[in-house]
Length: 577
Picture 1 (cartoon, rainbow, N blue to C red):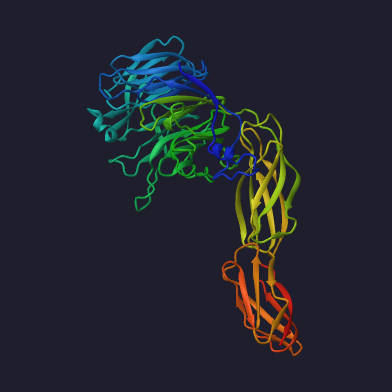
Picture 2 (picture 1 turned 120 degrees about the vertical axis):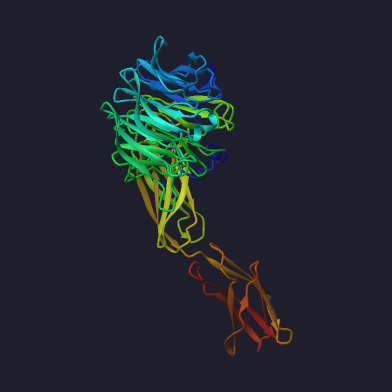
C-alpha cells in the first residue's frame, strides 16, 4: 500500500506565495481556502474501467479492465475509506469492467467478459448472477429499481469497440434478458434516486449527435422518459459525453461534456436548468462529475495542465456563489488529471473518491478527499478606508478593510473580491488576499472623474459562509499638473530672452503633447505670444524679443482636460537695452 497524506494544493498557491507580505494577490478566479484532507493511494493497475463505493462497510472498489486480449485477467482492488488497500480480486482470464454495489451494500456486481458476478463485500466470495454475451470492449453495470442492468457491445475485437452496436441488458430472476434498447458506442449507465437510470451515448463515428436519456426502472422493464440530443440545426453543439450523474433527490442531471463543460439539466425532460454552474477554469476539459450523497456538494473533474485546477468541489445548488475548493493534480504523487467516470461520493457526503491518471494514461491514483463538514461565519468590520484622501483619476488608490472569520485558522489565506462602479458602469478589480490579521488592501487606479463606489465581497468557501458586502464611495478628482520655469534675471532688447521649463501632468498619460499658452506683460500692456508644444520628456523652451525696457512678466499656462487640473506659472525679468 502506497499512501500519502497532504493538504490540497490550490491553483493560486504559487501566486499567493510570491506576493505574500504585499497585502495583495490577484488571481484569475476565486478559489476556496478551506482545510480539506486528501489521502492518496497509488493504484496497482495499468488501465481503469470503474469505481464503486460500499457505504455500509466503507469499501472502495476500483476495476482494472485489461481488455487488450480476450484471455486477459482483470482485477478489482479493494480499499477502505482511509486509503488502505485491503485485497485485490483477480478474475482469471476474464477482464472486468463495470461495477455496482447493491443498495444494502452486501454485494458488488461486476461485469466480466462473459458473465455478471456478485461478490460478497465482506467475504469476497464470488457467485455467477447470469451469463451474458461475450464482451470484448468492457461493460457498464448499474443497479436500479432492484434489478441489475448492464451493457453488451457487439464486437469481435477491440478495434470495433468505439462504434460497436451496444445493447442494454438486464438480469431478471437470474436470467440474462434483452431490454430492446440499443445504439452505437460505449453506452454509459448511471443509477440514482427514485428508480431512475441514465443512459448516455459517447460521441463516435456512428453517432454524430449522441443522445442522453432517462429511464424509469420501477417496473419489470425500463420505460424511457426524458431524452435529448444536443446538436443544433447546423450540427453544432453535439454532446461529447464523459460522465453523467443524478442529484441526490433525483431532480437534476449533471453531465461532463468535453465540449461544453458541466451541463445541468432537469431530470424530467432533460431541459437546461434555469441556473447552471459556472464554466470550468480556462484550459480545463470536463471529464467527470458526481453529486454528494447528502445533496450538499457537486464534484467536477477535468483534464488540465500546469496550475489549472483538475477538480472543483462546490455547493450543488448552482445559485450558491460560494467559491469552489480547487485541486491541482500534477506529477508522480498525484497524477495529472481526473479520469472519465472517476468520481464517487460516500453516501453521507463525508468523502469524495477521485481517480487520477498521468498524461500517458498508464498509471493511476486514488484520492480520498474529506471536504469540511462545518461552516463558520465571516464578517467585514470597521468599514472601508482609502488613501490618499484626495483620490485623483489615473493615480493609484488603496482601499483598505478588515474581514473577521470564526472557526479555526484557514490552511490558506481567505480572499475577497472587489468592484468599482462609476459613470461608465461596474468594473471587476480582481481577487485580493486577506492577511493573517484579517486586513486586506484593494489597489486600483480610477480612470474617471466623479464618484466611484467600491464594493468588497467575501463569497465564502467550504468552511466559511459568505459575508455581507461592504462599500464606500470615493470622490475622484482631476489629477494635478504643474509648470516649472527657469528664467534669467535679466534680458536685453538686442539679444532677446530664452526661458526653459518643464511641464508635468500626473495620473493618466495625455493623449497628445500639451500645448502651452504664453503671454507677456510689460509697461506697454499684455500680449499673447506663440504657443509652445511640450516635448516628449516634458521640457519646452520659450524664445522672445522684448519690445521695451523694464520689468516684463511671462505667464505660461495649460487649460487642463477632462482628467487633469489646469496649471499656470510666471517669471519676471528686467529688460535692458
